Length: 495
Ligand code: C2O
Ligand code: CU
Ligand code: CU
Image (cartoon, rainbow, N blue to C red; front, side, top):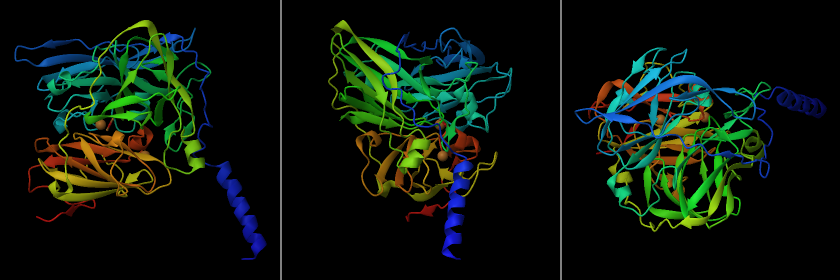
């Protein structure tokens, strides 16, 4: 081809690409210094429960539409559980049997999924467990996992992003004796504070809009924390424990403080670290949690902020996927005198380390387009089966230049390595969700503790909710040893 023609074609192609770029993003958003912090941080109420004669703790949740004054003088339609926006915080102890009765008062089907919970697949609330309008679903299970910050949200086929973005999300705190024995702030709403972060965008009529999107999905230009825009929290203690939950559909945050102060990371998705980590920032992709303890001095003010996100992509892709944004999140205002809260927990709870030698099967998951190993989610089809009680290594690689993430239901995993190196502190404990940076190899190890059940499946998927809705999800069953399948790139590890 003559050189001139080639150049002309190339520039034509460039123009065309820009003109119909399906993922233009939302522009770089910077709200640092521009947030007014004029709303007291709402603390989600603790869910009430009753205990049956046989000792089951029963919660009641009603999913319904409501309305919230997100900005002065306007009502925004929002959805919530037992309220107008978000849901109450459920608290239960390890060893307890719980039942949660979900009543669906929405005009459409929903499901309720217990993100991070180790439970039977039949109670997991994935896409195979729709609850029709007017119906009630009563999952029940015995809590058998370490103290952790878990959460719940809907998971209906193709509608998860919209339903969660309307406000269907809440926290589920598991407590246990090992955590209770530590010197940690744990007074709910006082020095142990849920921080549910979601980005929102209001249209001209002040209604929630999901129109501005990057490849990752909808990108909001404001933050709602526990359902309030521009929140402040009055700190009354010398240390405050924040349970950070990224409840956003698509946006990743890198949480840090306006004065770059250090804090202690004490827990990740599935529970406490074995040793607290001194950090100045912690990054969370959608669905991930972190518990941090922040030191506070009398009379001071400091802002929790998100900046310097690293999605692992090239600059242009970072910019279009909210990776270059800087956002003020929450202002902490310390009282003039603070109650001393003793936080002396460098050593937390020992973690039983899973080792490569414990694993009997190795599987590989390639994330590409809105597919996992080239397959899209198909309702009712089971992609693979794992043996109850077995340990497997799952290698996950995102083969695109765009960000994705990976979440597994019904199990907590440990990260053996990232591109062959040991994980950093914030990825060294129990996890159920990770950001998968482009072309990086994540080697996960996990033991499937659920009882065999061939009838009900767990899911694994990208937790960018629009990707999940587009079918970037697979399903697996936990079955009796001997019935596991090696499909989907599975490889027996000998023995
Ligand atoms: Cu947070 Cu499959 O979900
Ligand atoms: Cu989940
Ligand atoms: Cu994805």
